View 1 (tube, rainbow, N blue to C red):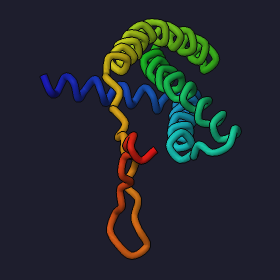
View 2: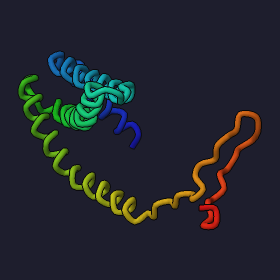
View 3: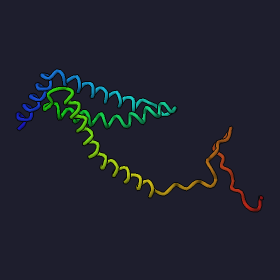
Length: 147
């Protein structure tokens, strides 16, 4: 059983290295995926430009992942790189449609979970203040007699 699996893996790798036109395409898609993941993680959210880059990477990472998955499945049947890219893009859209339902259900469930969580109550005395020479000082609540 293990020899059969290892043989299938080695034959797939040999076929990939025989087609020199598909290997650069897969390497390019993989490099774009790694670059977009790096940009998504390393970009800070301070300016509008940085927020735009983060949002664009948030959309690009799953699309590139699905494109890489579809291309790695379809490279065995493609005869030319343009055909591989066209078929991979079409299959990528299929994967996005199938996965979007699960994603929407997860987001909706999380939103309902957040909506049902009670909000914490505020402390009526306010946050503690620290004095210049001593420990924290809490203000005394005002009574009606002092007013």
